[in-house]
Length: 370
Length: 133
Image (cartoon, rainbow over the protein chains, first blue to last red):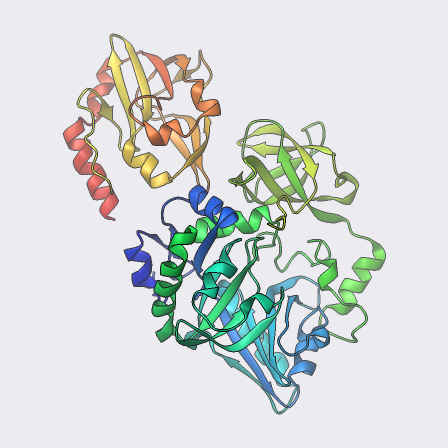
């Protein structure tokens, strides 16, 4: 296997005691002090994440909006300059190519941030589509872009120490380019993947180490800790945010995944619309639900879900974990709509045994204003 | 990796379990190295009392937040007692792996098998090499 790629923050991870793993070809820390501790610190105070492995594409030229509207299922036209929009990207079948965030940086200037593992696939997919938009350019800027995420209730207080900019006025799902943080020009957005308030900071790879050190130093008195991939996953899981390859993939549509509010049916034609509309009109056969274990056991990705009697396989777990903040064993699973009501008794097949579970509301965790 | 001295009165498996033999009863647990590799343990599945295990057979499972791992019996015999405290406090496997974090006890049916296991010095070298990978 090829040597995993290092992000510009590799040395920082090693210095912070990160346990480095190969994550889809990237050498990244799975944890520093421990998944549970990092998870709780992010919920209570703040966590700093290296997400430089994410893919970034710049869309500019004659008709970037027309291109994005055709490619994505959410309505990108509703994004004013300085706003971010989450959207699934679908195949004609309605299955997902990926899910991503579009940042509108200027009138005809968009940044698209995609999942690291899907970067090459997405670029190929989108490059095919952009050919139908002469004069519109799709450029892969992943190698020239580093990204840090500062998440948690103390994120604003920490970032305030490092910039003159009035970052408190940056609304949720807003972005601002050219913000100077610790003397470095960055693209700043009020977004994240943890269920907490916080920011994502895009910068040049050369600036990333300085920014990391500055944020860590400003944050330490506030209780900031570096957070690895382990807690990144448990945090997004508690907040029931989908992970590509688990909740969504080429086989599952955004409607089945409960992402209806990110699917527009009134913005005109786009790839996947016909299939999604047909599915909406016919009604879903299965949908994603939250499961809480009643019996002893932890649901995991790929485990079967069984009916109320624990006899017949009716679905499967997409993600499951001990939830470090809620202190429960929880899962996300696809089940038939008829068995998806809150309070529905089901079972998870764990090592050949049917262990009782109940359908619960998602997200499992929702932050309260503090 | 933190420095830990592996107790001399235990015998160790290549799959990172230990056994402490007292008379014909062996107490079984997971080594410091194993718990450190797994991270915070959040779930332990113990064998049932009365179950007959063979040396090398899977007796249960430990789960950290991110990983599920099988555990293998260091010896053959009948399970006579399990550490019920691990049901509610699986973190004992992290905090005291060679003591309070034990898993179960079994009546050893073939003490000759224990010769297959490593002593503390050999295990210490073995785990150091594993950790260097």
